[in-house]
Image (cartoon, rainbow, N blue to C red):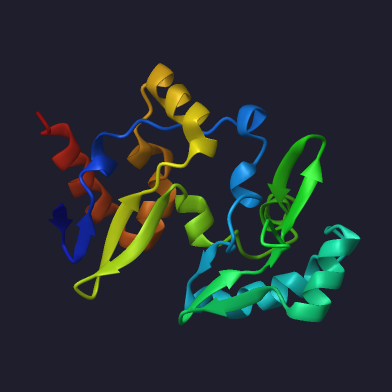
Length: 186
């Protein structure tokens, strides 16, 4: 484990290669898993607002589910996007054979003022807590095996793939120190 400022980092994160290819995985991260995406408390209000504004962009079953249960759920003190049948995120929709995020689609169209949760943009990096500090870990899911192969083929490091989300969360100086550490690895 290494530390940059007040952020702990699992060492597997710095040398991992990763590059998602939606044509291969088909957006599996929006569908697989028992819980939805982790949500920061500061994202909560924006997600409630966007859920109301996305009604016309979401499948009818998602709209009904949000109307009955809301778009977020609490589990062991943390917030997550709600899922339908412990599978797909309530913000997911199909575009052909690929599952996409309605929040991202609305943002790309200039309709939404926010992007999908930071945890979605960091995926497969997860922010845990250790000793009261953020602890970045790399979750190696089987659904991402093609992304690991694509990252290896293209030479794309995971920390570069999630660069913008890391900078949003921790700042450019922090990210530069991470890249400096990575460059000095044996």
